[in-house]
Image (tube, rainbow, N blue to C red; front, side, top):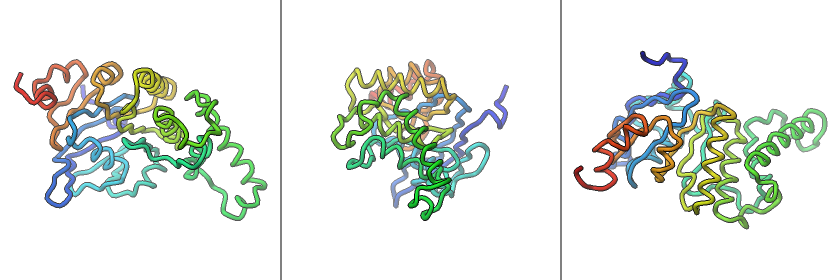
Length: 260
């Protein structure tokens, strides 16, 4: 029995992305169901980050379409997609390193702010009430991600693992319905990876969040994902459940470079 359109959160339809003579994505298609953890795997250079960049609007594919909640967003700029509910983290941390954890999260709330520059500067009436409400939401995220001890710490002074956590918090501050995570555990030690995996599962379970995850740790992918798509040289080579993917000969060959 096929899924109804209302069950599909994200539909990537035969997208191709080129940079000059380099084809980063080649006719990639898949569907992400509402409320699932969907993993994208593949060796280095497979096109995984190019795919995430296409979904959130940093890149615009020359061919194909991207549908979000049934709406064609292929040509929308990134800020419009953020307002629709698409948020992401980056493979290379992109934070305001001279600002505190709290300020980084508050900066992400700007797309939800409605007061103008004058009332905001005066900090009266609606502007004051709005600031209080945004601060409340940010404090909830800080509590959820167990960052109370670093809320006033300058981000540039934090360890790598904690900065990754702040970046996740900033993505959540946008109040997304689709969360894109580009290698959220890269460079972490075992304990930091376990914490991040726990937070991802809690986000999914408590909020019913749809998550698209790029991750090289195959053990983790197989443990927490509902569905997996594998890329190699910009082309989809396999798709299925974690059990199906780890037994797929094309995936094993792409990772190991040998026939099986």
